[in-house]
Length: 226
Image 1 (cartoon, helix red, strand yellow):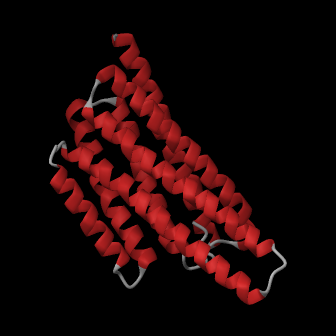
Image 2 (cartoon, helix red, strand yellow):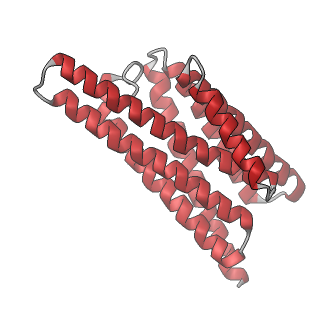
Image 3 (cartoon, rainbow, N blue to C red):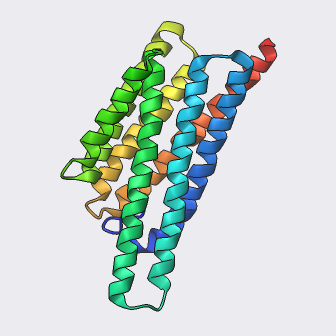
């Protein structure tokens, strides 16, 4: 979402384009994972696909609400009306992004536990939303929670790589490590550090592309086995 207090003003339009790109890439990741799931019937791939469909939805709402915000900023309306409308859109977009992105990361983490206990999954979600939405600093709490989820996911892929020495596990490990680094950079971008903000986007884009490439390779391998 466009957090006007830390997004460089010149980057607003490019920010919308990037969120559309993120939405499409994560949607492709979800579709690719579902296709591999149909071949292998692995439950973890179904959860992986579901998690990225949530993440794709988060970026969709980002792009949509950001576009509406920029549209309102360019309209010839009263300054007070403009500020009120932009604030509402920015708030709604931020909450929608946090809800769906948290759903995605929580589902990914749940996948790593290899548990079929839906009560544990629902409890995790409830605790996450309570921790984020009742925090005094929504932005910091959201990124802190995201970092914790990403750290657990990284530990999972590191464990898989150590045990099985598989190339795809290493690729996923690197991708989620990039996402964690990007997430930390976004916290610093709140200090109006434009360089951190741009670097964060570049690292995030690289991470999603690595995940997509990995799934394409996995699908090819599964098709060869068939």
